[in-house]
Image (cartoon, rainbow, N blue to C red; front, side, top):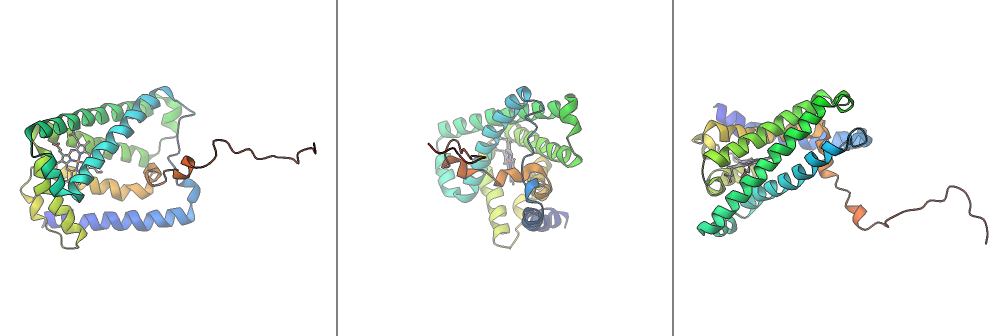
Length: 225
Ligand code: HEM
């Protein structure tokens, strides 16, 4: 029963919150839709935390998505031991990088008084949830060998069953508690997402790629000649 609530019902609550609160916030308070950068307050530690964090977590999330979207291709990719080892070692390296980078970002908010003062309760909640997510992920990769393979036979069919509105929680039922925590916390992060500065994830400024490098707007009329 509790599995059904946690893995069969809660994911829909999380996605419903994500979409409804996200749209509401965008319409009602558009200027809050940002990462609310604290770079002006402190930039050195931010650089060493933020850059590795973003590169590593994006690659890890991409791997999660590829195994979900293209399970047979992913299975073929991992069909040779050498490719499996390479992928697992790379994943572990990236996972450890996310952990170190996130620890730096958290210490920066704790230790730097100017940054600490602009950190809200929701920010702490997001940081705690992200820390739990990457710590359990790295723990799983370390202790429950070949997660990239068994993910295909557990997480992938469970996630697809959610997409098809026919939750099959038995795919997760027999997995160790730490995997269940990792899966539940992923949806908790989605539920917190629209209330936090995580919304910046879906406001990538793609137009910056094509706009002129510099836009000069004349404040007064230019003199003739
Ligand atoms: C917010 C979404 C998620 C984030 C940020 C996240 C993050 C991570 C991280 C950082 C790792 C460690 C990678 C490594 O060291 O190899 C990991 C591993 C893992 N994650 Fe997630 N995860 C998310 C969602 C999920 C979901 C929904 C599942 C489904 C149950 C899942 C299943 C796994 C598994 C099985 C591993 C171990 C992979 C291996 O051993 O190579 N993750 N995750």
